[in-house]
Length: 221
Figure 1 (tube, one colour):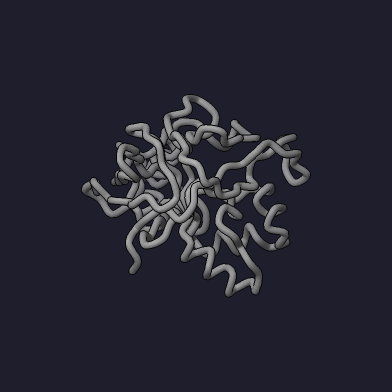
Figure 2 (cartoon, rainbow, N blue to C red):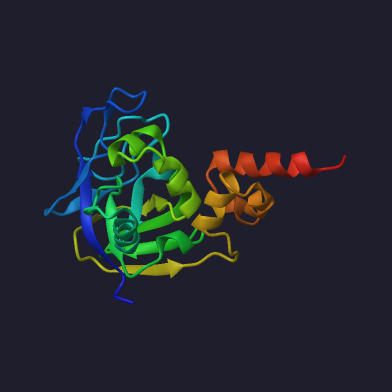
């Protein structure tokens, strides 16, 4: 496998959104040559300076500060669909190579470049805007069945990054709950939902609540 690194840093500008409920979108991410500062955005917005979030109710904020998708998965979709998917075309902030973002564990930490430290929080859930941008009528169903959705991160230590920066996994938590498992637990395989309890201390509040509800539902009492 190639050295784990950032291929491109991708930024989205504000555009009209003909596909979803939000009037504007920043899903059309394009590679940028200049270094980009990444920090915790707070309750809304992107962690990348200059990146636009059009639906802050469902996207952005500290637990979704950075979205990462692997070039290897874009290549696979190109083969499946017989069309090109340039870096950033899935709305990802960072397109990476040499690291399996979908097998990253909830709470796992990555160091990118000299200073930036990110922590894995949750999978990306496909929305109608994503389907509209890809222009595939069954896209949400296909993307969900594939269960390789890419990964959201929160910012632990801010820093400036650029294309080519190395990625190093600097911490792996003591469980085996991966992004792919969380995605399947919340979409296609609800039998996995109790497993989320193993990573509860690292999950965002909405997923903690989901996992707790799943346990209650299975309680015979």
